[in-house]
Image (tube, rainbow, N blue to C red; front, top):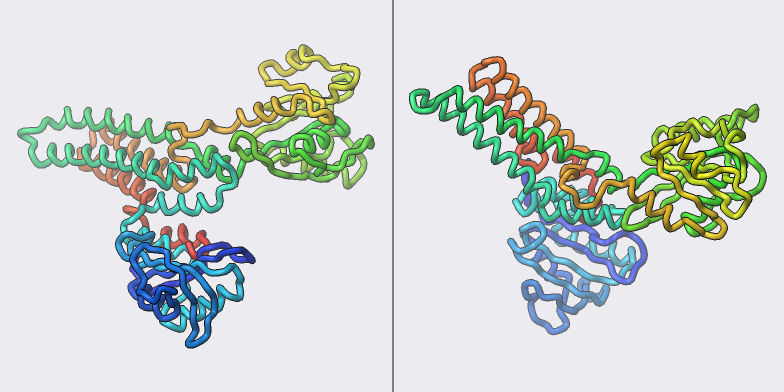
Length: 449
């Protein structure tokens, strides 16, 4: 990856009106460019790592009263000279300051270019760089904690250990090939097979793309059931507000409706669906088709059963293979018992609620969260899709190395497969990553980060 030594500038805070906006500059000319447009109130030059009050000036015109800080290399985010201007949050003002910086020799930063420079200058690896964007986009406490662990090097340390172990195996093979009189090839092959197997098993156990998706996007929960089973009332109660239309008329919900809430740090994307039944109504039939599609794609399929109606009258909705069953309308005369549900769906968790009164809702939220992967577990160490894909390629290469040994192939054939595994794992941290993939990773970043 070619390094670019231009001095770059961009707004680091989100666009829009606010109390304060931050404009960031990085590159060898940062201090010089900042000094041309910022004048400290105390009349002194900026000190390293000290926030200073002053004015943004354009010639003799005062543009804004602001704070500025200079962070000289290498103790900065990019390991280059970095400066920041903390100004008032008007977008017109930010635009004016950026134009001044560009006039003085900076250029506009590309998306993710500050973090790209941190990566290229060795401050962080590629997995940590991705964690920066995960942190910015975190939609739940669970996602935020996961991003912090990745940003602090949890993924990187795990991958580094696996790579170091593979390097040891390659060294053992090299010794067996170069010194056949001193190193027994058969013993070396057996040792390589066993250790490659241990690395492969550990990598496979640590891959969980589903955990990463749920951390970043949330747990997809779909409410399914017959018309007028109480799905919309249940959704409103879980959300704590009137989001879905609730009437006594069956079939009110004609389409899927999704809203999100958080519980115990987990984001839950809750989808209400059209009632499942055979119908001649064209619009309702489309709604039922969309409901079944949502059910197929859900992480958690919640079958909502009207407790005041006998099960025999709800047959259209009882074939959705639920992960969780909720009996609603606990304030009415119950025609459905827990035992009847257990007989029909053995082993499926069951909850009873009265949505209008809020009874059983807190317990139901706890049950929904239990379907999310556990937080901070080693089993989900590699949870990002790109990391999992690279790790699984490494696992296949390790298995190929074992197969080569089983087939009695020369050890140098096994070494080729081990090297492929080493390269695949290196893609996670960026040690063996192609320029194209690095560009794709940073293209997903926002400007200013």
